[in-house]
Length: 334
Image (cartoon, rainbow, N blue to C red; front, side, top):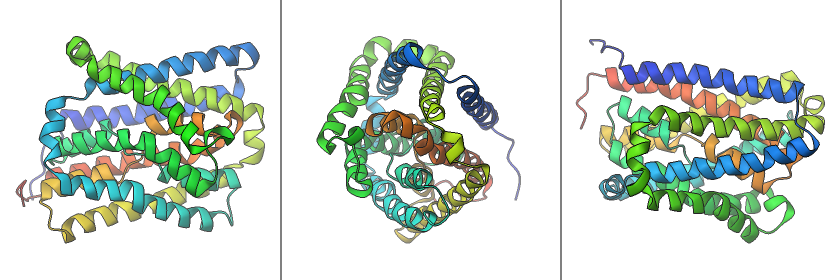
């Protein structure tokens, strides 16, 4: 077996994983030492809402209609990814919450369940599928559809499986609020693609900075509220280690299940790659804003801790898996 040269995209992605991981950790440290309070916190809350709206506007503007049309033909693939994201993951999440409640705080156990109810990622799913030489148009369509569907499905799953929604309101109110904050900017961005699509393509680093910066802002605001409410007094370090172990096991099970399912159902290797990378991930970009809508501010910090850990683990694991797919001595359509 001959080793392929490391693709430039892979080098950039792995570097960004390390850098972004450090920025997330640094944001949590800053929020711990210098949490925002009072009017400053109110200002950050408004700024966070604006950043989230801009984030989903850009996601909508980046979504090509040609990619949607090209990917829609792979409907069997989308059904498998959809089932993995919104059926298999939540069922595993219920088991994980029940078993981890014996040794984790209720907030962390619920955070593990919450992460399993979220939609898939978009950018990293597509990037890893491309690196592994998979079905990129299908990955674009499947990951994007997962994110759009998650705006409606995740609040319902949270209401059904966690018994809470919209900071104590009903699930319909949660859907309405999330639709206003996330779906509306997404739709507006997609409709504005003919006007702003060229600018976005020419300024990808700027768009990436806005994308990641908005998440860091949301994380800072969430952890500030949680720290003020005594987060680190309730979550000792040994529990974070246990959460990391549980997330590793959860990710391993899902990666094995999606690959096995794709092969048992007779998908091509290119489709298998798309299923593995789209069906095994959970979106930090969608999960953090949704948590801010669905739960009280003081609870968000602890709830998103498992999601942040899982997010980094999935990127690191999928980077290795994508490289192995790319190096395999198999034809792309095997």
